[in-house]
Structure formats: structure tokens, C-alpha cells
Picture (cartoon, helix red, strand yellow):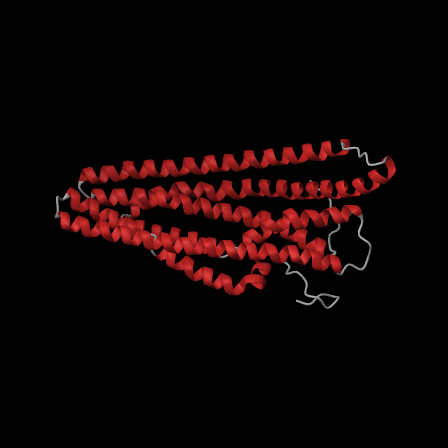
Length: 330
């Protein structure tokens, strides 16, 4: 989209940048993601059938064919994942390269003198801030599609096997809908503060190096950096505490779900209403939900944090936000 000076301007959002810079690659990544999650429930069904054949003392030849099919499906799924991950890595690195080049292009187009502090911000943007923004490009669309597809496939399969046991286990995922967004917002506030503090350190270093060397024969006082460094440390520790507390709560909910499914499923087996293989498949399905659910939460966390970083990044490039105007959020 052309800006006021006739040059292309930055898209308003991180997802707009993703589509603008790598739209065709995102479509290819989406196709690979769909192929991967379509295979996600097949290993559970093959495991269930093997267990039921063994419990019923069936033919070993049947077990052999089912085991071979299981290996074939898993190898296909993992091979597709390998292609997907390598492709994601290329898209991410290409976006990082584009963003770093953009900083140089915008700096060359600047119509005013750049202060030492502003030069420090540009250095920070080239060396550090472009990395997470560009890195998110590789997973921006394919990750929720892949993990959401895995969740949907496994949940539908579990409901098909035994809807009561499946719903009992899934009920323990509901509290996460409440506490995950609350904790994530706390992380986002600290992440934005950290970006602005680190920009201030980078800009201050460049400015003071230039002034200090001229004024004191090369000696520079570094005492001013202690407060912002301590501020970054405090913000990082706050992020760690919230992040790992959230992971602890999510893991607890998962294990409670597995325990409830084992209890209820075991009771049904003793009553003769379901097969042992069904209980094993539902419990394995709950286990298979944990990773994609955690990955979706991580993706949502990264989307929120990178969205903040992108707005600050684009704001500096477009002249909408300058270091002098930036204020730490309360």
C-alpha cells in the first residue's frame, strides 16, 4: 500500500505483513498442515484395533498387518512434518531478511538527521527485533491450522468411540479458556515494556558513546544503565513466573482429564459395556490433545507478543512512534 511519499508502507498488523510478504508460501504451508492433521487420528484407531485383537486372542497375522499399517502411517505423518518444519524455517528466515533490509531502506529515505538515540533504536531493530517478527511468519497461519486440525480430528474420533468418557475428559480443558487469556495479557504488558526499555538502552549507548568520547577522551560512564538493566531483569522474571505457572496449571488439567477417563472407562470395562481398546484409545487421545493444545496456546501468546513488537517496529519505520514519544505502559 503506497504511503504519503509514494513508497510502499508497512501493513497495519502482523497478519497483514504475513500475507503481504509470504501469501503464496502460506497457502503451500496450509496444504501441508492439512495433510498432517488428516493422519493424526489414524494411529489411535490402529492401536485400538491391535489391543482388541490381543485381548480377544486373535490371529497374529492380523496384528502384524495392523502394526505395519501403524508404522506406515506414522512414517508418512513424520515425513510430512519434516517438510512442513523445514519450509516454515525458510519462510521465517526470508521474512527476517526482508525486515532487516526494510530498516536500511527506511533509514536511507529519512529526510532529517538521525540522533544517536534513534540510531541505537535502528540497530536494535536490525539485530534483535526483526528476528521474532520474521520468525513468527513461518508459523503464523500453518500452526493454528495444523494444531487446530489435530485437535478437531482427535476430539471427533474420541466422541465417536465413547462420547461420555470423551466429554468427561474434555471438561478439564474448559478452565484453561478462563485462566490462559488472563495470564497471557499479563505477559503481553511485560513484553511491551521490555521492548521499550531495551530500545532505550540501545539508543542511550549509541548517544553516550559519541558524546562521552568527545567530552572525556574516550571514557564513558555506565552507571546510567543499571536501572534499565534491572528493569529488564524484573520484567523477564515476571514473564517467566507467569508463563511457567500457566504451564503448570495446563499440565494439571491434562492429568486430571486422563485420571477421570481411566476411572470412568475402567468402570465401563468392568460392566462389560465397552472394550479395553476403547479406553486405551480415549486415554491416548487425551494425551495427544495436550501437545497441540499447548502449541495453540503458545501460538496465541506469540501472536499477541509479536503483534506488539510489530506495531512498535512499523511505527518507528513510518514515523508514527519515535523514541521520544514512546512511554512505558502503566
